[in-house]
Image 1: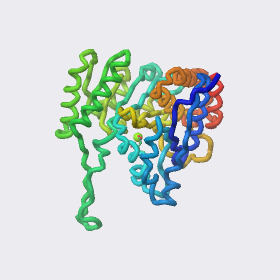
Image 2: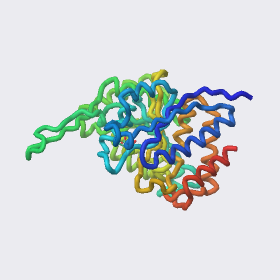
Image 3: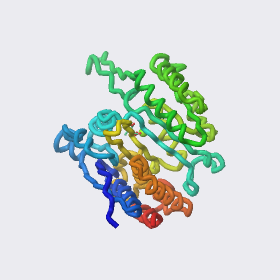
Image 4: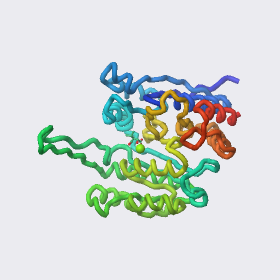
Amino acid sequence: MKQLNKHNIAIIPGDGIGPEVINSGLKVIRRSLRLDNISIKEKVYNWGSNYYKKHQLMMPKNGLEKLKQHNAIFFGAVGDEKIADDITLWGLRLKICQGLDQFANIRPSKYIEGIKSPLDKKIAKNIDWLIVRENSEGEYAGSGGIVHRDLPIEIGSEVAIFTKEGCRRIHDYAFKLALKRPRKHLTLITKSNAQRHGMKLWDKMFYEVKRKYPTIKTEKLLVDAATAVMVNNPEKIDVMVATNLHADILSDLASALSGSLGIGATANISTDKKIPSMFEPIHGSAFDIVGKNIANPIGAIWSGMMMLEHLGEKKSAARIFKAIKIYANKNGPFTPDLGGIASTDQVTNEILKLLD
Ligand code: IPM
Ligand code: MG
């Protein structure tokens, strides 16, 4: 049978363990698609810290234009010991997310039988969360500056920006996702008790959008209290919508509680159909373990699965999730972050075998 070649993917392996895990993720998505007789067109962009060392830029000036020619972006990690973190981040990952207006960042966390949580199993098995992170403004808006540089009276400001439309669109996206889930429950994460301007607008827009979704039950939680609820009563949460920084912090907690940062996956979504969305593991470049073949590839494989779902390849995506579940249920083998001694390649090969 002739293979259908429908999807044109941009691949940015990036720095550190990025290339190692992206390689695993690609093997898994290619194989799952092939079983459904679909192939993808891939174009690798070697942007990131090594590119920066040659060009003083994390990606070329026309990088965003190049990315717009693709249907999706599969991204590894950025970060380098020799370059300041804000340069690598703002030069690549944030430049793409903000430049392509991928305003919704989706981070699922789910208890999977066989993967050990730091929580008691009775409690951990209730973890089934979707964090919806505002991804275009808030605390990451980049507004601020330094005044009186290098003088004793030097000051730095970092201004969180909340726009009415920015709040409206992320809440609306979160309500739509909650509608698709059986529990139909959405938690508003806020800190409007202490931060009474931007956070108040954030809350106000939530309740304005809520009127459109009468079947969704909602709850409001202050971000600090939310951490305790996640640890003690995971069943109280289904979908959460949170600001850029709050969701950044809560999603590391969510990943750790569901087993390891190595399994966290994320989608940066643009709702404009002509603009590609970007899929990446939530972990960083982890230069301490580069080249050791021990990085956990599950975060990248899970991200690849989210990319296939987004591209409408539900069957190939579901097959990957099933393989991850069987892999975990029969106890791995796991990489060191999950308490095992397996290599990245061993885990990848195991998942590939389970796809067939
Ligand atoms: C994440 C990461 C990034 C973030 C880092 C690398 C700046 O922690 O995707 O969660 O804070 O957004
Ligand atoms: Mg983070």
